[in-house]
Amino acid sequence: MTYKFLTVGIFASVLFVACNTNKKSEEKNIEAKKTDFDTKLKMTDFDTTIDGKKVGLYHITADSIDVAFTNYGARIVGFWIPNKKGEMTDVVVGFGSTGDFKNSSEPYFGATIGRVGNRIAKGTFSLDGKKYHVPINNGANSLHGGKKGFQDVVWGVKQVNDQTLEFTYLSPDGEEGFPGNLQVKVTYSVDNNRNLKIEYEATTDQKTPVNLTNHAFFNLNGEGSGTILNHKVLINADKYTPVDSGLIPLGTLDPVADTPFDFTTFHTIGERIKVENQQLKNGKGYDHNFALNDGITTNLHSAATVVGDKSGIVMKITTQEPGLQFYSGNFMQSKNTFKSGAKDDFRTAIAMETQHFPDAPNQPNFPSISLEPGQAYHTVSVYQFTTEKY
Image (cartoon, rainbow, N blue to C red):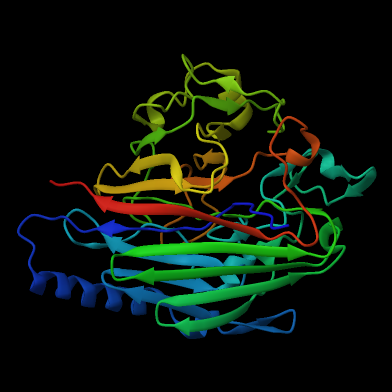
């Protein structure tokens, strides 16, 4: 039996549209981008050893797209694409060294999240009548795999070619309280059509919950450009999962109609974020799972579209997953300095995490995240980038 279970891949397609652009100006922009990449990130700042494993800086590049990674957390460090003026813009915030990632007060920037992304109520769940406990690290609950999730481990890395990177990790039986040896592979690749794809695969030797995602923090106007409140958002979801004060789902799927969670047409993030609403109070803004209209599919389906108000960069998300966690940067506190020199100020980046629903092991009405021996976990999501005209 093959288990088709879909999580994160990212497939970004960037269509460069700018007035009076010709081949020479595009080549100049590409060269400027490479210079910017070399200036912002230095191999020596990532060259270190953690838990006896070598950490480094890697990047894959194609026509007018450059993506930087580190195998500490199998994470995206930076993501350069053209804005509407043809200027290379870093749309994923991150740090300039391994040490900065490791010591950050926010551990999830750009990282692969697992073994279970999002929250597990009170850090407990049961499989086949046996109760398991995972570390509490978010109020009374467990978040993103426990105290040492996949963002804090060093992954094996293989540079397949200039356009492809593979990251692998064996999560041993009992790690952070989860059962089974879980073998995970994440493959990133780019092409000359300015696409970035991230594909997740996993197998286990014991039944275990799995809900992988990527926690890139986006600012489509560029890292350090200021607030995201004027970004426009559309989400293809008529329902969402309301939460308690600890951000654990109540178990219902509530309609978004006539609420601040209705993004079935475009709204700016800041338009309704301060209205009187108990769910916005619970999340301190948007930090909620949206139940996508197409549910779980084998084909990519529409999840969301985000537009940078200054850059004209448009990010369209498609996925095979049933859910999308929209997080509006509510807990960013200016405690960390990004590679651009900017601080991680309040609501200067957002996350759009394709996923299965939070607390799924404890919610019988939610799609299951249990992976059995002999089954194959495999999923793709797509973040497509284009630009608006002037």
